[in-house]
Amino acid sequence: MRYFKVMTLLFATAFFMVACSSQSPEEEMYEHMEAAVSLEESFREQQEPLKELEEQEEEIYNQIIEMNSDEISEIQELSSEAASIVEKRQERIDNEKDSIDQAKEEFDNVKPLVEELESNETKEAAEELIETMDQRYEAYQELYDSYQVSLGLDSDLYEMMQDEDLKKEDLQTKVNEINESYNEVIENNEVFNEFTNEYNENKKDFYDASELEVNYEESE
Image (cartoon, rainbow, N blue to C red; front, side):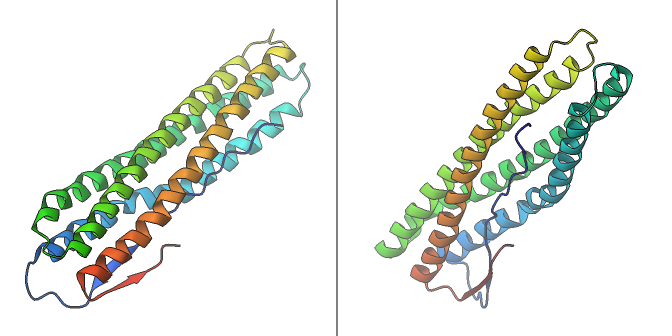
């Protein structure tokens, strides 16, 4: 059986300022950071549809491997259907990446403001926050790249299934390759989630050090 591919990604936490009477550097940073969270909304919106597509594809794959070699026309039809799902997954993952890229670009607007912070405690909290966000973004890039590899292997698999002379050992070799690729995806997914948790905690620390009156709600 092939590796089941559904990922669970964690999201940045949204904070809400209670009062904002002026535009201090801390408040400007708050605005950029929470705008970045809003820009990740499309990233959030891709998760459930992507999960559903992965489950649909897995179901089709399981149907295929239960078939006999003399059912080639049915195998070809189902593998074509699965290949179309891979294309839809590609669209979703590209939308996800575009959202993350936009959010990171917005977040980077906080970097020039750090030098304007008067408190050393606040400045240190800001620098730690920025470092974690950069690590989170790099972790996502690695996750995206590994997922791209896996999508390519999935496409190769369904193309192979169109071949009437496909050998069982060749199919198994490809499936093993796919399994290994998704193990890497899951590992990268875990790293991204770790940095997301750390980023959310560091943002709380920054807001506490800045003495900004903010409320927050945990992402689901």
